[in-house]
Amino acid sequence: MGALLGFLLGLGLLLIWQHNAFKPRGGRDRQSLGWATRRGELLHQAGLTGVSSWQLLGLQCGFALATGIAALTVTDSISVAACFAAFAFAAPMALVRRLRRTRMVDLREVWPEAIDNLASGVRAGLSLPEAVAALGERGPEQLRPAFSRFGTDYRASGRFIECLDRLKDTLADPVGDRVCETFRVAREVGGSELGVVLRTLSAFLREDARTRGELESRQSWTVNAARLAVASPWLILLLLATQATSLQAFDSPAGVTLLGTGAATCLVAYQLMLRIGRLPAERRVLR
Figure 1 (cartoon, helix red, strand yellow):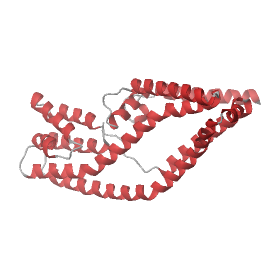
Figure 2 (cartoon, helix red, strand yellow):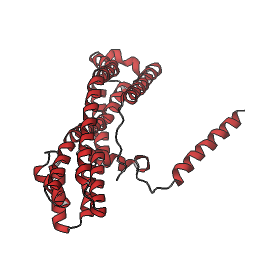
Figure 3 (cartoon, rainbow, N blue to C red):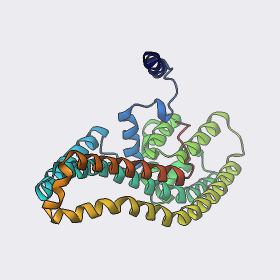
């Protein structure tokens, strides 16, 4: 019976591996991107365009090593130092995710104003490239650098579609993807309804931002309380570091098991809290 279960488990793992190894790579959804590409996109969406995924990994390793050495010096406990080194390894990525979330919230609030400016420019008789490039001067402050770069590229090359693709990569934002694709369709197909489409999109984005703001404000106290509950045992462990003799017990097999179980429990509980409280997020499907 055991051999049969082992065979079925191995067969299942083989089928999973074959599915991942030989599935088509034509799409560019997030699951089909590589590890380094996903982290690079995360850095780009956080506004850290000068940092690569490998540089972030090096920063994580260096921060974890420095924290582990400092914790080992203070506590004289290898297991406790390893726990804090693991937390230090995850800290830079948590900071990047926080920066990304802050930037996405900021962009979500200024996109309606930018789209209103575009609609006004189109209604005033500006050509589509001129209206888009004008956002580099009259648009919201957060979006001006990207649209200024678009205006420079368009004046240098005159190729609207290629400059639009570079603008999408610079913005790295789901709403920006939709707006750019609207421009692409208007440029290639034509039509007189671009202003109506932009005003409708602006109204939808304002409503979405208002609803998300209300939901996030209502759930913020619950999320913060859950974070405090996860962090409190490790804060107590940090306070125990003032008494090095009390931490020697954590280097025993039972102590290592206790720390490992506690860390795994906190990680699972925290991830579960994030998944339960997560609001639906837009994906960049129009890359």
